[in-house]
Length: 334
Image (cartoon, rainbow, N blue to C red; front, side, top):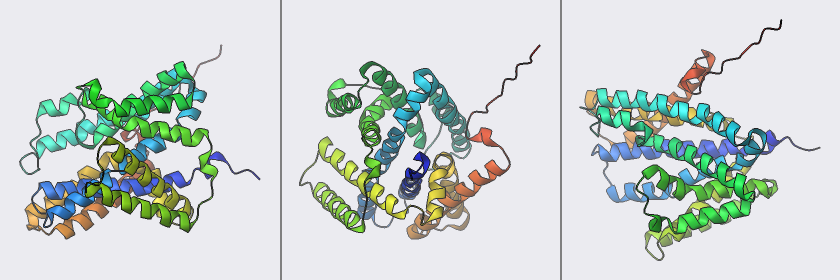
């Protein structure tokens, strides 16, 4: 009996769950560091570098998994139209909400936010929202590229060439640079899906092997045995592969992790408000400056209060907070 496509890819929600926990922790840790309450700077920088070496490539990879299927169903115009509602709309809405809060509270936050910073969202994304802007650009670029090339391998080669020669392109727009830097992982997700790599069997042995390779690659890079963009690319793919193996093994076992994955976009949109808000509140109202306290509780609040908020929004049917409202057009027959 064949398994449905949605069931076959249920592990993706677990991968997104792992990824969003790392995202929240990374932003909480950077907020704690920038607030000057980190005791061990060397450890912070190491953990930060390890997390950022693969957690955002993971999300671009996952986005690429379903790209071809969506493109074949909707076409370029339909795909772009759908992303306007699920990426661009929440990007603009939450950029304004978070930016407005940052401007209002700039006297107690780590950075001064101006009105021009908030209103520059159309060309210069702020904070975590760069990912949504870059992802939308990636969707448009590769939708157009695929309509011309009609070959997944050719798209991956194109993304690899752009990645290798990005410094020679001298592009000044940060969003375009991010799209080039992460587009290769998006195309890798396409390849993964196209060649049905999802069907491979996993075991704890494979997971341990991937963990070993991950640790070795990180050790060699941070001890400068090898450096450069290709080394970063290899580390990212090793990290993504490790998360895939772990997610497939965890599939159907830890349902809360899968729930976090299904709500990963909503958590991504609001976690900075809750996570940073907790740090600011505890620091300025209670003068608590213990880094472990802020890292642990800040991450838990950033993840689970955001999750509760997302679930409350769904229950109250305030879905317009996370996606563009859909209006049904009814035609009266005469």
